Amino acid sequence: MNAQEPVVAALPALAPGPVLVGYSGGVDVTTLLLSFAHLSAYRRVGLRAEDIHHGLHHAADDWAAHYQAT
Image 1: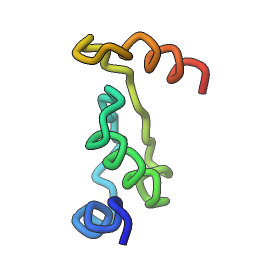
Image 2 (image 1 turned 45 degrees about the vertical axis):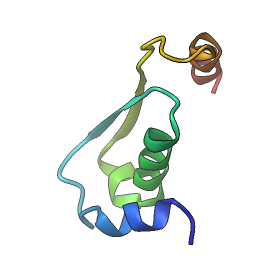
Image 3 (image 1 turned 180 degrees about the vertical axis):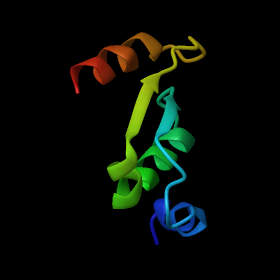
């Protein structure tokens, strides 16, 4: 079992509307974002991620640059 499976199982099958994930680069939010992306219903209604640069990690600047490049 991968980390996404229990999250995907807990999400409603039908997306309630567009979803915006505040993405800071942590494992928890990465798992959440990948779980949403796994479900076509969420991609269809609009799934977006927005960089949240809280500066709590020494590599936060690198993460922001990586998001913008991908």
